[in-house]
Image (cartoon, rainbow, N blue to C red; front, side):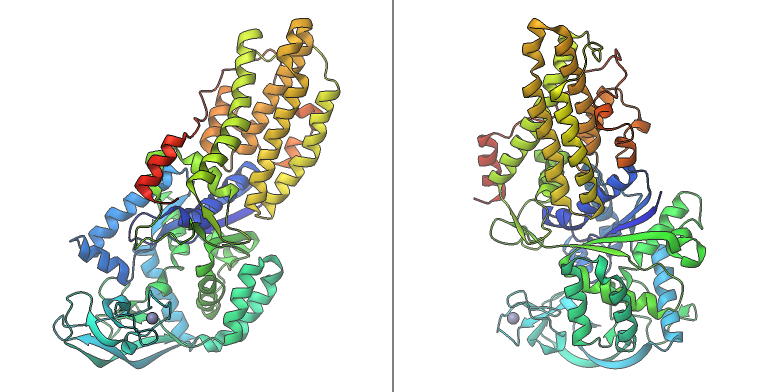
Length: 576
Ligand SMILES: [Zn+2]
């Protein structure tokens, strides 16, 4: 048994996330967490809402709330929606909670003690009418690169150029619209990342062999360009206060830490929240402190490709720069984009389907299956309603649902609702056992390698092999001439139903539970460990259920998606 710490990139607080966000971090992290739990490992799966920064403050202003009120409400909504998708976080915390505040201030103070923090004066846009500095998105104006007139202080949405607010032409306050702005001096803390260049490269080199190309290419691109000092504070009131020796830092009373500094620290903060919530306030240390038991933890992070640089370079600068024994990431799984037809999902432009709306259309398992089977692993992939319909109807309804329904109903009708006892296995059962002997190890291998598309494809292939088996064995035909022969087919079929449920657990957990509950499989017999599944040999796996044990017919697992639904959804959400 191993100990595996899993974190998903933190969803930002400004509204419910779209399916692209789900597909590129939270869902695969959950699939991996569920696989490892089912394989018998000790798993801690941590996530949280990322609540600081200007977009949160601006969204609160738009909603007529204080940032704290806005974040309280949005956190609860995101938590509820996540539960609707069966995301099995051990804790879903908040970057605005006390543990993260304490840790963020701690890291800054030790980094400063280690000579990696410097106070510098910089130029910032100041709004005379609003009586405040305008960091990042608080200021808008004309892009110096392309001339777009609504470029935001941190980035131009039109040409994508990263900007410093002082570069904007004709700047104005996005709070009040006032153009009465000027450039003033302000003091900020800078993290001297360039001093950590060699240490971060050594850290990346040591892990590169275990990281996918997408991850290493981004990390090395940043390292090759050279790390530079970066400001880790902002002129804002919503955020973590800046301290020195545990007291408010002089001159920084109206400043807070930049969201990109505190957000990744919340992986630790949320674990502290989890440990406090469970009445074991020191328990988090055995996951995060290598001097307190975390040295043998395997730490796996999940994220979209836009987050890779922050996790392979920026956050390691914080951790390594502290010179304290913190756990560093071991494996990092990054994803490309799931697109909405030809273009991008967009939270700000409300383009595509959002998680809460998706759950109003269909249960979480339908989406989980589609998004895993089409995970944007090797390249970007595109969501279309037609493809979604075809995938759900074929994989879930025809291949899995019909098999479970047909076999269990026949057992109920012809074998008294019990696992049949008669007959002896023959060539068809041998063929099926042979299929499992190849396919189950392949499936487990894909999960171990975090190849989620391939894991879904192999899961489907095993379901399809079961269908092929039952067509060959044809118990419904055999019943007319030999009840014993039919008994073998249905007994094998029922054991396959159980196996199909067991292998479905990581991707479609609600469905898997319906199947395994109906077949009376105890929690302790749902292991996805190859050592346990193959322990008695694969033929034995087809005769594992106690003979004559009563079983129930599971409720209908799926309903087919109709053309009329696709037309309705296309009209409501776009696409086509
Ligand atoms: Zn531009």
